[in-house]
Image (tube, rainbow, N blue to C red; front, side, top):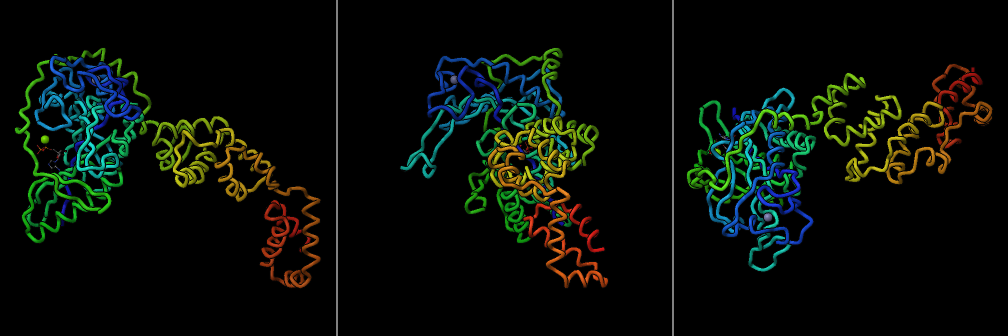
Length: 475
Ligand code: ADP
Ligand code: ZN
Ligand code: MG
């Protein structure tokens, strides 16, 4: 039996207005390359960093929602290395005294421990040959990202499968979004993950080399890259091929990992305390003030949904997975007063339509009022559930109300006794053979008659009433 061991080092860009140590904007995308920069974040001689208070608040918030200890004493250190994306030749980080230690995230019953979370600054962005922007054999550099605040979160190697890793990352993203700490957008690089993996052969006690996969930029690729690496490491144990401890990258086109470099040791970085920044000392009052800004988190919300609205835990879990979706759900319930009805319609038709159209809840055209439209139309017998499901995509696409669409398409259910009787009479008159058979005991033919009525009314006849009238005539 092989046991997979996975631990993560995650970088989340913090949602501040300005960068960590200067007053440049922390917005990463709206600027032309190298226009959102200043002497501080480009490491000019003689400049000094000034710590952004908002950065500290967001780190505290993160510490609290990740169930960690927020340390009243933390400090900044220099991590030294030479690379073009690092203008000072060192990165300001927290090595010896991180701001957060000892948290955890639960995925179902599984607890993944978080060893630490510390503050640091982002590097500049390199664009290499083959990237979209650069065509020649050259590399370009954009300093706009340099100095954007990051929270690095390091887990213990508690994760047991590639799939669980993906669940962990998605849960972390949900939490960071909820508390407005980070957008958690992996595709845009606001959340990045380096995954460490090794394999233990439980029979022999032999453990494979540990590999670190860098620069994974989507939730799907986290899982894919680890699946690939898991197989590669198991094979190495089986063939007793010696692998090296190394850092690898994920090629999402070839769907395989490739070697980047042998792993550097911590001591290579010559960490030492940052002399340009004072130790960071927090008071209980300050931590308390931050605590008060934390909104209701997904797990609490889920439990509330179950008790307050009496919906299944599974549904409540999905509805509370994003704050926007949860708010939408509650707005709809306010209008309709039937939480189960709303939850069913969201869980099936709405989420399906959103997925098909790659929309998110913020730009969905179905207004909460439309849910009460649907409910009224159903309750008054004007439409059937089948018709509701049929027109749903149209309502979704056009943003027109269900009532409007029903009218436009002439889909209102035929509910009028006299009109239904007329149609039933016609059907019976035109099918004397079937009537004979029905009377001689083949009562299953009722379905045939219902079908005929539906054909004539293009499915609009009220099914209960149709049944009742047919029976009256036939019996
Ligand atoms: P290093 O000092 O070599 O960087 P750390 O103990 O600091 O190692 O751990 C770095 C990351 O690697 C952490 O996320 C941790 O969970 C993970 N990790 C540690 N040991 C293992 C292992 N045997 N297999 C997989 N991941 C591991
Ligand atoms: Zn700057
Ligand atoms: Mg380490």
